[in-house]
Amino acid sequence: MTLYEKIGGEPAIAKVVDYFYELILADDTVNEFFKNTDMEKQRKHQTKFISFALGGPNQYSGFSMARAHKGMNLQPVHFNAVANHLSEALAHFEVPQPEIDQVITHVASLKDDILYK
Image (cartoon, rainbow, N blue to C red; front, top):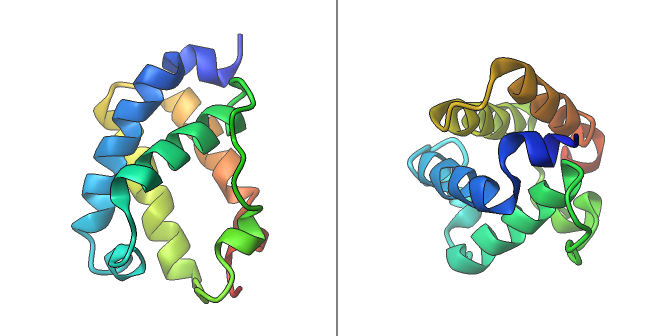
């Protein structure tokens, strides 16, 4: 069983993503990066990306991580805030800690493609 299936598939991930962005937009550490973003489009895009990243169907057709974050000059403080909000959003929907740890480990593997671009 994939992590995607364990979490509950795309409907569950969409709920997590919605809550995740509530946390992001309330956080002055990172909300500035989304001030000119179409959040409805961003939520759909992120749901597809996370679904794919966790072993779901390959519906992601966006940019690579490096290209998507080019010019943002994200620093470790930004990355850590986002990872913490994702962890909190997963916990909010009662995803078990071992699965949260797997998600965060996967996110951490993308760090080099996101930071300092």
